[in-house]
Amino acid sequence: MLSRVSRPYFALPRAAAATAAATAAVSAAPAPAPRVSPSAAAAAKTVRDVYGWAYVNPRAVRFWDRDICVATILWFYHKRLQREVKKELPAGAKVLQASNVYGSYVRNLANHLGPLGTLDMIDCTPIQVERAKLKLAGLPQASARLADAAEPGGNPPYDAAVSYFLLHEIPEPQKRRVVNALLQSVKKDGGKVVFIDYHKMWRIHPLRYLMHLVWWALEPFARELTRHEVWHYADQPDKYEWRKKTLFMGLYQKTVATAHL
Image (tube, rainbow, N blue to C red; front, side):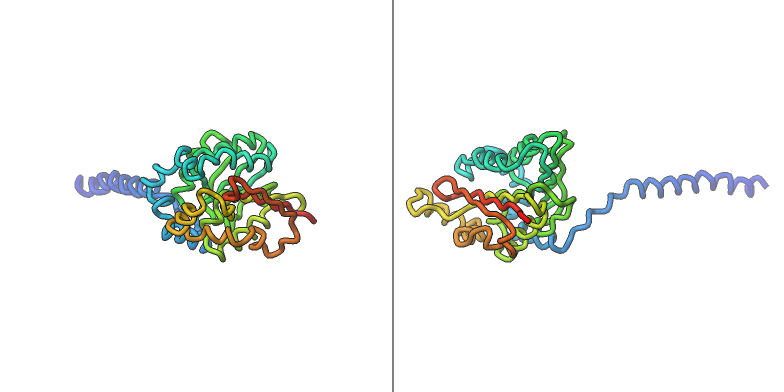
């Protein structure tokens, strides 16, 4: 008789333990990965295939993501180029940043916008989003998320969008998609898109042949920007006022599109 009563008595702890284990397993299960659009997946594949050595490999990311590396790559024009961006963006603006940028750029930009501003930074590769989140820690006005610049989503319209050395890293058809997506993401009257990128150098530029060698070896999509203006990629360029400024004997450009009704 004791044995019959004992079976359910001893079974209760085992059942409770099993239930607790199942609950713990569910709690410990990893959160579902964020949904990635086909566009973002295709963009990420391009990054992996062409720029994996710089933007995907964890060791490479840790090495390159420093101001000294950015300064060297940009011939120590990085601070000047950042100032050119800030000139176009007032404090308190709501800004879409179309990709992560190595060094302190994204944090500097968030600080420039101030606590009343908003910086929505996107990138198509998870490792770059995580790097940006680390840089933006402690700045409630800034965030980083996974998205493709050709389908930025988010919470438009923005006061401004910024493409900082992004266009030279994407193929020709993607350039068109990104330019038009950024133009459509800003306010229809007074919204602004700032493009900082490479440009056609002066013929007497001392780095002309070296830069073409670098582009040929490492940046296969960069030379397209020496043949076309940024507005060449816009489907409706007449809806925007365009202005361009070149720096360092034409090696760099700041092209700004301002929407008007």
